[in-house]
Length: 507
Image 1 (cartoon, rainbow, N blue to C red):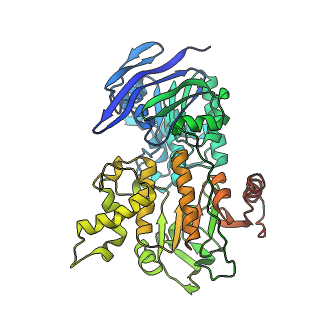
Image 2 (cartoon, rainbow, N blue to C red; image 1 turned 60 degrees about the horizontal axis):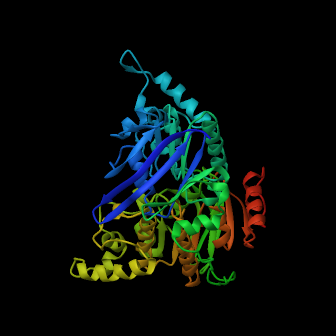
């Protein structure tokens, strides 16, 4: 049995009105990948913040190699070998890839930044991840998934002995995740310890050897061998009761109906070419592809955020020219739940009421003003419908858990009575119970007649929800599949399309 590398012992942390940690304990060993599991709000992020010096515990202690330590700041954590990749991006967009990677220890010669060494060190870290990115490329030009990988390379640059990964695969797909897992296995073979936080239990069971489960701030399972527990047992520990099997409402799609949204031979300034697809009322059309396939870029072009250079967009059979998100909503009843909820999905410094009401202010206004009570009454309906957990309507969106922020992001479009909804990575970083609620809600919206374009990197989610699947590669449609909801068959068919040398005919 290897020695304990990092121990967090009986940590307690209280914020106003909330006990985030309640004598929680974590024990990590060298050469181990340790899973830290729990629902949103269970205390995982608070524990990581304490380990990295962002927060100070009210009580309890930390030990590294058996010696008690005080972690005063993130910089101090890095200095003693504790590195972290947070779920939310923590990069400087105006800096280059290389500059972001080496930022905490910038190579210099004679007091002058050594650009050659920056490129060399960045290239070394990127090669570890198998990531073909130019170290001189601005981070602002990267996709969300590419930015996440740069974050991981940034952590690898430091000589970390303990690497904390908070939802590291949330924005990357299967191939990138497998590449990351290879890096993690090399790190633990070198005697390091890795803490792996993920809501994707299939990844946890494939990668991790021990597990700690938090519930309501307390550790209900501590440093247990993962092989001794199955998925159902772990879920029961996380939610505190047996999880009911998810049953989605039955629905049928009239394939002869006029598409609510149709793209014909679309080309964009981002690089799309001859992209054609259609989604009908009451249908969920899945859009799948690896990082860099052009899925999010296509959604942004559809909403007027990127330029369409050729082709036709039709809404309810009529040609449409969409120049902004506002026009998409007010003229065509199209909503967009973005994958980047922190920067684009919610206004973190504004109350939940304002976040949900923003899309309907014109409808609510009286003599140019929005009455507070009228806004609260309308918003309360969607808070209740989506089960958004908050202390009150004036709570800031930034104070909510990731799952509740995503619900707020969705609620504002439901309040606007959208008829077409583009949903990009709806359940990234969301716990199993909240994910199930989202899946049920998306299916119910389709039953109600909404046309949904679902962009997801989660194959089980895709197979569960979509009626048809369009696969993108290199900004072009690679093929289309009718979903028979047989996971093994569908996942194999999707992967074959992704890696096919020539574009496939619709299946």
